[in-house]
Image (cartoon, rainbow, N blue to C red; front, side, top):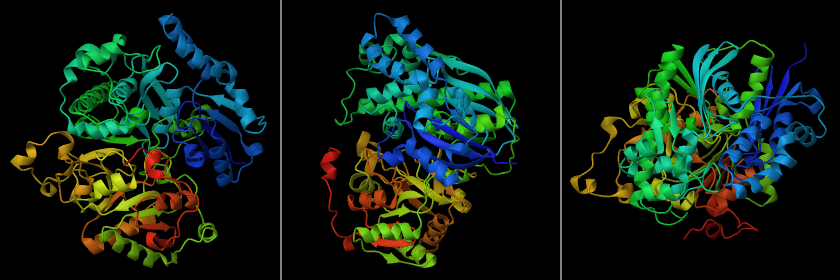
Length: 608
């Protein structure tokens, strides 16, 4: 019997992606942004499709189905109803949106066929939150589980929950637009001066610098939150139904002034707003989880949707919620919809059985391109780069020693990660024991805000030695406290500091990965899918007695994570990284020739 090949696609809003599933196995998945170098690229994922087909050795004529992650006609119905409901307001927004819908989005099936070079096979569509739910449950290690999806909006749904059993998913309830936890968080992202759909991480990182002084205002004025986690939002304060901004004048009046202008100085108000919306989000997530647990009777929970990338909230769910185990899709946002819809067709539509064991089927999220040593060497030789070629054991030993000397190392090894987190395939690495590492990496490597925390990669067998966690967190989607005995108490003088002044106060003996509230966003590494990265952690532990490395994504502000050796080399040369590892090759910055087509990188990102 021939293999069943299904191509999943998400596109046209943000984080377009493609995924190839063969007989229920995830063969390849990647976001379009990694190939075009356009962050959150929303265009049809032509490059990602090309990669997935090549990785799977599949031609277009060998595809059994192409599946799209939402239903454009249903979404169009919601948009039309929305505009009619607020008319005559929203005319400008309507006039901007309609041409694209009339020209392309209403005819997504024909657009897919055209973009795939005249593909004549079957094209199927699933509802947005059904795709999210499938991406959460089907790759999970659970035979049965509750499923909870939360995001901005799909067609109508903004939140859904249900049950997954075997190869079936049944959704039991939804919250509908405009009432949206994702939109609430994005409104505060906009109001605090960050970019919607990409700056939400910054709000989460800023939250510990503030006080939750606006929680009551949010819960009394902005939303009516019920005990079961359902809610309605007061649209008198929001502009996203009909305008080009998230909030309006009433919102500004409630929170003491106009939205912060991007790139201007952060004040205590923004920190307090971030803290407040984070606390409210966690409370909503907890109430929802308790309700879902009560209704479904399940002991395990699967999460997806953009809100599931809120790793602080996820950590609260695990610690304080009713579920014994939680599994979160690493590409929880729209990109993961491509994977979800492909699995949905295989299991639910075609009725194919699903196999589970104690591990998930995401292959560590290493689903993107890899590059051979010959390909890497050919590129480096073409630009005159200077490198050493080392045996694997020697490379690991040298790199671990460099990291122990507080050198910052770019690391490209094996297949690229799927989802927003770098997990040891495309990472920038540092020594977590260094009190200067966070500031250096933020300002000189990442070119981003100084308050942004960094995440630790920790050997799975030693996670309990460092953090209040005893389970797996392979995808860096759970936050947990640093062990009490590793924390450094604040002096009375330090306690008097405000806001960003608190940044340079070491919180533990792992200061580079310990956030202001003594927490850390943890990646556990067990070596099953990325043995080279595991070996590096092991060697660093052998040398230093520390089983942790700083792991941040291999990119600079405003750019996607690197994909190719060329992307990595250019990022390496344009920042103050000390060394670069490309497969088995080690490069020292001081040995390299100048980039021939370099630009003023700092001015491009409005940096001093």
